Length: 201
Image 1 (cartoon, rainbow, N blue to C red):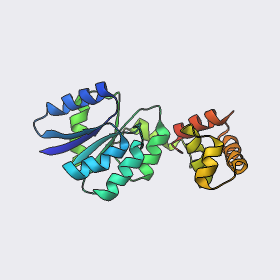
Image 2: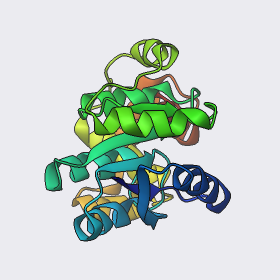
Image 3: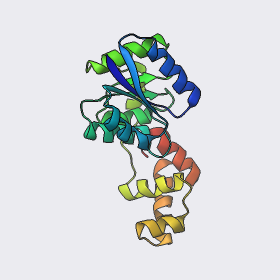
């Protein structure tokens, strides 16, 4: 029996995935979580063989949570759910050592097969997805620019960010300006969108 943890924040999608998995005699859903920060604690408690992780999770994104899960529970294999429209995130996941992906609009019957292949340690890679992901280069942003832009993505003001990072507000604004320039964006919001799509945040 393959024990499965399911991490998906959208109720309808999570219910559908869970229902599909429960139809399989060799698969058992042992835990369902809705946020990225719940993945590791649930996995440590329930000891799943495979964790199905959506990339876009609240609090902690799926890639960050999956990377932590690999460290804390290396015997648990990870299958990432993603959309073709976000190839940069796949690049981030590949860089984190995750090699199993299922595109969200894949036929339902592929889910159980993907779980079994992931459990067996096989790669589950959609060629179109990987090809698209490889089109994005490495992030042009420095670590500090990335941090400041990530803060902006969460709606944190320059003043608040300055306090958190022990910088002056002017320095934070300079980092934001640099990030906007490097991403070729029109403004801060556009820079966040570009960086997120490229998987740089």
